[in-house]
Length: 54
Image 1 (cartoon, rainbow, N blue to C red):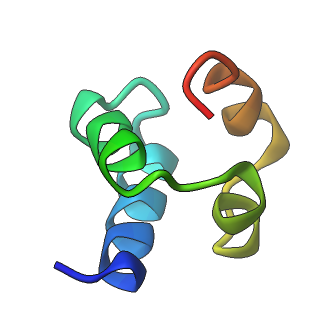
Image 2: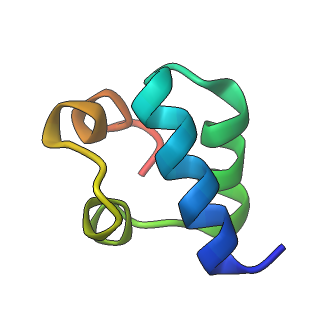
């Protein structure tokens, strides 16, 4: 899995369920940043729920 694939998956999963554990694990595994996540469409509200993670 590439970084861009992980971003796409995380975006889809968090849009459906902001507390998705698999998405949070991918964020940690790839070290995804808030900037990267917002660029793929993650809303500010969802990013705020990830404060301790990113």
